[in-house]
Structure formats: C-alpha cells, structure tokens
Amino acid sequence: MREAMAAADVGDEQRHEDPTVTALCERVATLLGKEQAIFLPSGTMCNQIALLVHCRPGDEILAAESSHVLTSEGAGAAALAGAFVRALPAYRGVFRATDLHAAIRPSGPKSPRTRLVVVEQTHNQGGGSVWPIDAIREVAASTRAAGLMLHMDGARLLNAEVASGVSARNHALPFDSVWLDLSKGLGCPVGALLAGDRPFIDAAWVWKHRLGGAMRQAGILAAAGLYALDHNVDRLAEDHDNALAFAERAAAIPGVRVDPYPVETNMVFLDVSGTGRSADDIAARLQASGIRIGVEGATRLRAVTHLDVTRADCLRAAEQLAAAVAGTS
Image (cartoon, rainbow, N blue to C red):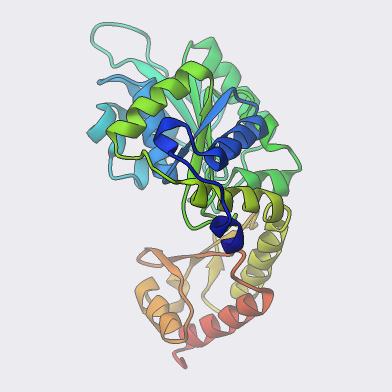
C-alpha cells in the first residue's frame, strides 16, 4: 500500500485534477451503484455533509438509538445542520419499518419536519451487526412512501457484503446517499467516500470546502484506497473469523459475557459486570500487556479485529483477558 502511495500520479484535488482521486471516486461510485462519489478525510465528515445536504434547520432525522450520528459525532447534526436526531428503538441497531412508520410526524406548523432516515451498516454499537437486505428494503419502502430521504452510514459496508454475501451495490441501491470508509477494515491511513446522484455530490462539494475538507495532491491517499479495494476486501472474512475465535474464548472466562451474541463481523462486545472488576481496570491491565481494548461503559468493553491483528494475537488477547479478570496480570 505504501509503495502504491509513493508511486501515485497526483494533481490538484480541489480542481478535480488529481487522476488518482478521480479514479477512486469513479470506482466507488460504480461499486455502490451511484452516479458520483466524493473523496473526504473521514467517515464522520461523510455523515455530516450528507445531513447538511439533505436537511434544513429544524428538520428531524430518524436513526437507531445507538447510531453513530446520534452517539459519536459531537451532536454535529444540531451544531452544523441545525437538525436533530430522534432515536428509534432497535435490536442490535436494526429498527423495524413499523417503528419507523410510527415515528414519522404528520406535517403541520407546530411539528418539526421529518426529513431523513439513517441506516448504519454494519451497526457499531449493535456488535457489528449486519442489516439484513430484507430489512433494508422494508425500511426503504416505508421511507419512500412517506416522501423522506434515506442515507446509509456505510462505515463497514464491505464487512456486511463479505458476511452476508449480498453485494455492496445491492445494499446501497435504495439509498439517496451512502458512504464507504477506507480506514477501518480496509486498512488505509485516512479517507472515506460519499456517493449519490450528481446534484447531491455537487452540493456535497460546497460543504466539503466550507468544512475544510478540500485537499491538494490527495492522490497519495486515494492510491491507498485503490490498493485496499484490490487486495483487502475478501480478507475481511479473516477478521470475522478471528473475532469469533476471540469471542468464544472470552465467553469461557468466568464472569465475562459476550453481548451481543452471536458475533457477526469483526466486533466483540464484552459485559464484564460478573467479574467484579470495572472495564477501566481490565483495560488498564490489558494495556500493560501490550493489548489495547476499547472501554464502552463501566462494565462494557469492545474489541475490533482488522488486518493488523492475527489469529495468534486474538488467542493471546483472550489469554491475557483471563489473566486480567483473575488479577494475575
């Protein structure tokens, strides 16, 4: 990947003169079945620009109660777009079309305008859960019937493709906008791409400049994305297998519970309330052993596998987790 970056043909990305960026945008647009795509520094910027294009101040956005746009983007919808996110009840991040339909407000001068529905694929806080294609189609049908817009937070869309066998294009087909992250399982140092129709991308370019997301010789970054799409998609299955192997061993540790279970992709959430130790304590003990794990709550931990984590690493991490719980590490 670094060799590809060093050899990249570059130009001025702001002027649409970087051939490597152009090639990446065209490839991702085709991959997702959209007219165009725009290269951005991060997935959060993809989400926020999509909200800014779709919404106006006072608009309401419907998303799962544990969605990234609600819990992990610094209230960007309110701060930037002047819109707000209304939480929908969801099982592992997947909400039902019936709950969506019930949440849509009738139009009137005293009510906010329900404008946008957001689906997160895979769903982070749902344990890396995959939205089933039938559930997507049902939600899309309800969204269209109500005259709303539909956006996919596709941070780990290719994980969903590999796990489900359903193409990213078919996952993305019902959506007005969708983005794909390069810096998660695909292993790139930076970047994400937001896709949609031509008018949407034209508007996204305006916000890209306003938010400081325009770049110059960005081909050195885009080259990493092209390399990842060529070499790092099919191997996502290894990450899923490694996560499952870690989860199975973690679940055998007294007081540790894998929740949610089963593990669908590359994320493992652990409930350690039964150990008598806090998540912070266990994470600190693991850190001392050279293992980093995310703290998601007082007794909740998150482990994520990726291309820099081997099966041996996962087995060692499970052993050290057992030691940390027992207080011997």
